[in-house]
Image 1 (tube, chains in turn green, yellow):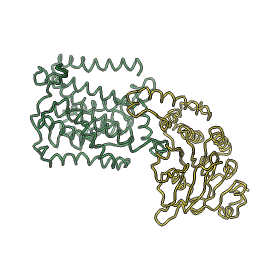
Image 2: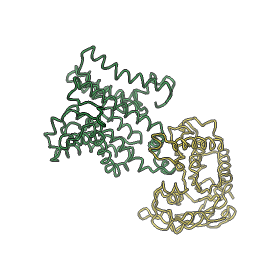
Image 3: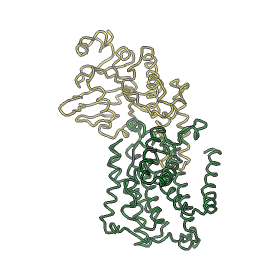
Length: 326
Length: 260
């Protein structure tokens, strides 16, 4: 990273961590906290989908992992009394492990075949959640407590959200920090040799194998990182809404995660983040259109994909120096 | 010269069709061995069997005394047998240099997480790969196109890039699948020199499948001729040129085709 990128990152952090809370405070639009927190969390899940795109696989199954992550955290918190902050990595880990077993067979498929199988995954996860006793079927798990205090050696690192005056702000800050960490990791993956190897898979798996890359292993690794992100996002989401049902994440959410990546740009690390922001707000803004909301929304998406196949970040506005992926 | 690779009774069936039928030959260290034959004779299948992109139906491939048939392709590559492809297969949306750098994978010492965190080993690797890529670029005379996107390169350069990718893996045996296909005479002669250089200066054993007979006659130390999946002849270019069976196999166009 050069100085310019560090500066841009700093400006971004200042805006989201200081500027946005100030603007919300001044305007009194407190509901924006919930919206922006959702955007931050959904963009973490989308970042995972983006990573599977990066190895050349169309992933329409991220909803399954957000659901699994959500349930894992909810069950750990309500039934075993585990601290929410501990369940975050555990939920991610659970998803990563499950995705290894699912990924091993299905990652051999390519193109539309892989996409079709992943499309089913979300539905399988939903039906499983309906059927299992531990997930409490259609009634779901409700009144999940707010995140408890996290302390290390008696030192409070994160305060108990229930005692806070403004838990919405706390959730927002936590979500933004997680999002930044997630995208920093993604940036690092893409700009290290790891990313070059992923790109070699995306472009030509046979050649990749013939230069000695263990393609099956690398695919599974990328997919499990992707699922880890999905699990963490799902777990956080559940903690905000304090409830989870089998229908919390559905096929349409999985499709949205994928659309976020398309819209922002598959060639840019920040693509899914921008895509999530635009799609989420675009949908909300079109609410005033009443019954035409979905029609206009989908037409706009089709237009955008046709006119900007490489995503919004491919606009000249973002590429002044003609630079490639950021 | 010692034997580096041995093909023993190698057989491959696709349903009822026997694409490769009990083929035997050996490859000597440091030579250029061409495999020729009419269309559909089983040459490419043979290559895929040697590089383990296909499983054998019978027989075995022995590399330095060790059986390598039916291993995973990346394991065979790791042992030192690297294949370039018939189609101009490269990583299209990377530059020439990036293509070559990525291809150094076999020489990576650091782990994947090492690359993520930027460990000392990983940084050493990256510096080494960059240097080695520069060296290969100079060796093959590709400086003018080093930072060009591969998808913008003309075909002759793509073939050279294919070989550069192969060299980056530091192979012991390089399998070239139709390196001269679709080239004009000048390009072919340039490529012949290039392949010769790779063999002489880098000591790489080279096996190639090719249709361009004048080029094959010029470049090969030895030639193996395949027809209908079976080996029908083996020998130096001069021997092959006068072999009755070979002339018969190329019936009709034999005079032009094998450059008599």
